[in-house]
Structure formats: structure tokens, C-alpha cells
Amino acid sequence: MGLEFAAAPIGVLVLLFSVWALIHVGESRAPRALKALWIALILVIPILGFLLWLVLGPRSAGRALF
Image 1 (cartoon, rainbow, N blue to C red):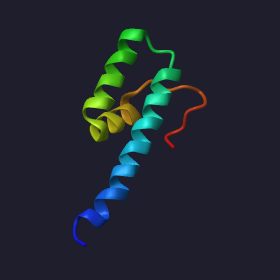
Image 2 (cartoon, rainbow, N blue to C red):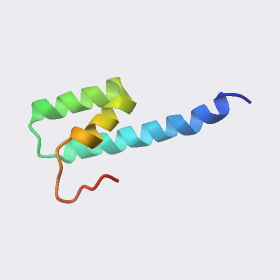
Image 3 (cartoon, rainbow, N blue to C red):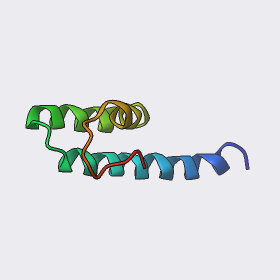
């Protein structure tokens, strides 16, 4: 049991955070082109895409950081 033991929980967290970000991208009032860009970014580079969405993504009144 080496690195595989830690990889599964990290992978699940990355998946959950990415899905959370994708849901919020879809619910945002951003223009379609911007939504498409965010979705592509989150799908291509999930960790960085999620972090960028968290910091730079449009804010809504009901969305807190977590």
C-alpha cells in the first residue's frame, strides 16, 4: 500500500469539486460563451479550473465559497 491508498480519496474530492463547479457554472447568469469557457477549463484541468472558478468566477447572492 503506497501512493494508491491516498490517490482514491483525492480523486473523489477532485471529482466532487469539479461537479460542484460545473453545477454552479450552469446556474450562473454569465453569457453562454463564458460558461462554455469555464466548463472547458474545469473539464480539461479540473483542479486548476475549480480553483480559478472559485476565485474568479461570477458571484451570485446565494453562493458562498463553500
